[in-house]
Length: 428
Image 1 (spheres, rainbow, N blue to C red):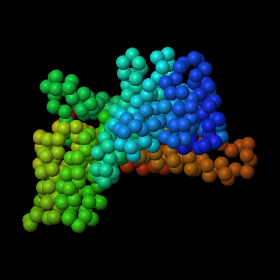
Image 2 (tube, rainbow, N blue to C red):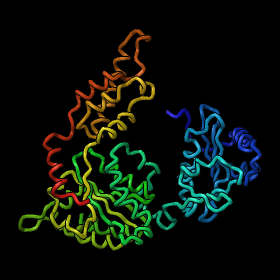
Image 3 (tube, rainbow, N blue to C red):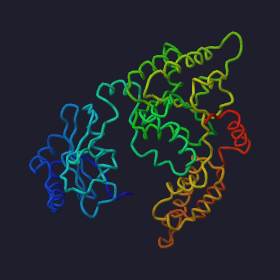
């Protein structure tokens, strides 16, 4: 736990804001907005505070003017700096101001101000010698309605960096997908056409959905997940609902569209007479070329069973790349284990041993084993009458026992088939 939390500003927080103001201006940095203006904005515009217990340890104040948003005040108590509070406050304020349909969020700082990491960490850019910080918001005013109707969202920044390990896959996706889409002018200079569609394949639970979301986060594009099972209940039928969904997606400026378990609607066509599902497959085959004509969009499909997809579906011209996503390597397993081990015992748990013994585990398997170890350690502790003998958290032994009791999702046979698929189907 970070030891602090964010909440809305309350009227009785003014004293805390005043103390933060005094700290922020103590170094003789002349603020752009005066104290009276900050206090007024706290009460009539948008203000959030970070609290530790009842103490205010950080605050951010924002104001909206038409499509432009301004950061009026941002400060963190001295002893709480470098803990991510400032960046978290900026992210929360941006979320709070979304209904205004802002196209830009900006901050003016004194030229002598040196504490700018919070702005840089939230994606602001330094503009000119005035240190004018500007962040172009990924969703424009006119897109909000369409995105909401589609069930889409803007994912938090940082999901890309949160994918631990898997460096080979990350490097490949960064170079093939992210770079050409994020820098289209540079791509054009080298004669590269930015990708429009990619297929991710691999065993269950290997992180294909995680990578799709990370790509959207990295690009700061809208993320829209299409669920065929939900569309099937539409009165117009699955094919009609799928067509209308993609028509609405065309109204978005930038979007990553994700279809998981795409084999449900793109399995190999067979049998006479044609089944209703074949009509859905035919519709999807028509949709993809139209989708590819629209710039600043990326279709990401994922499947656990690439062998059963219709041969026409993977043909050149529909998917730019067919990329394998396999089981996590040693570095990735270490990062995943580290995510679930409580800080109270992180220094005493033998991570090397956990990584070694969980070879062949998917991320979902590791999460299950980690939670199982924590639950067992808690129950054992509660069953102990001697309070001094109670453990403060799971031990290496608890984790190893949990690993031993967890059946890997991906069998040896499935892993071998995956390697064969890489050799025969992957397109990198």
